[in-house]
Image 1: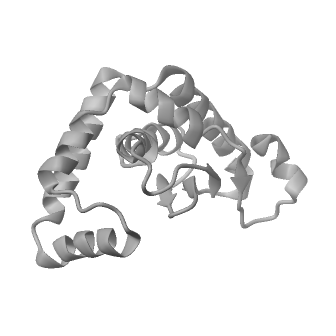
Image 2: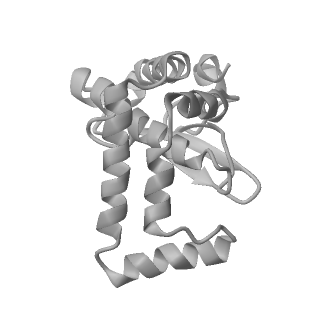
Length: 177
C-alpha cells in the first residue's frame, strides 16, 4: 500500500479526484494497471482508491507483487504520480473517465439496495443529497483545470508505505521522500 493525505469527503473537488483516480488506477484501462501489470507483468492486482472522511482523506494505491519486484513497482507509482501532477489527463482519458463514472452510477441505480445505500451514506455522513442528474452535471462539469488543482494536492505527499515482506523501513525510504 502506498498512500498520501488527500481531500475530505465534502470537498467539492471530489468529482474531479474521482475521475483522476479512475485514470490513475481505477480499472483495467488505468495507467497503473497497464504499466505495472500488462506491460511489465510485475503484479496481478493493482488499483488506486480514495478514503474520504469528514476531517481528512487519503489517496492510496494497492499493488500485490513479490518482494523482489517492489522497488520497480514503487518507481513506476512515483513516475505515474509525477506524470499525473505535471501533465494531467488527456482529453480522451477525461472523457472516458466521465463515461465510466456516469455508467457506474447508472448501474448502481438498478437495484433498490444500491440506491438506498447511496441515500443512506449521504444522510449518515452529512453530505447533501444529490439527485442523479445533479451528480451527472457535476461530473460533466469537471475540467482539466479542476483535475490539475486537485491532483496537485491529493497526490503530492507526504507519502506512506505499508508493506508485508522482508523489508526494513530503510529499504523503502527513498520512495516516501
